Length: 145
Image 1: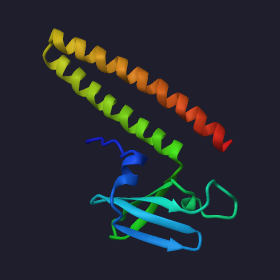
Image 2 (image 1 turned 180 degrees about the vertical axis):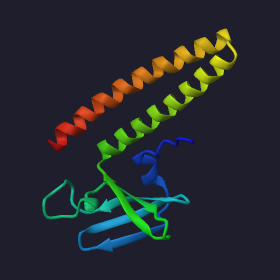
Image 3 (image 1 turned 45 degrees about the horizontal axis):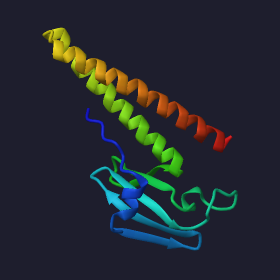
Image 4 (image 1 turned 45 degrees about the vertical axis):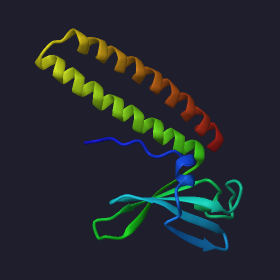
């Protein structure tokens, strides 16, 4: 399994609009479509989450759709800008975990000193990333709490 890190909100905003949906609540713009995922950015709507507006009509929120087995696009999740950063952090940690597993397996098969240093480097990076994800998750949790 290959882990990919989601694009930043800024990079999504800069992409050309593939399609847009405008309703009385605001406007969502389809910015990126992969074979199984679509990324929409809310460019017009309410400035912050309110009880009266659909959550995907909050400006700068990212709506993610996944392609279902039946061939239709299904709403997967809606992310605030902070939650989007957090999801990128999770992606990065998954990527580091996979790299660490690959290096550890290679080390078990054939020991190499340069791989020891590489494993240590990935472990330090993973610890740093985990701390950053934890701190960001606390901020996101407090905003929703």
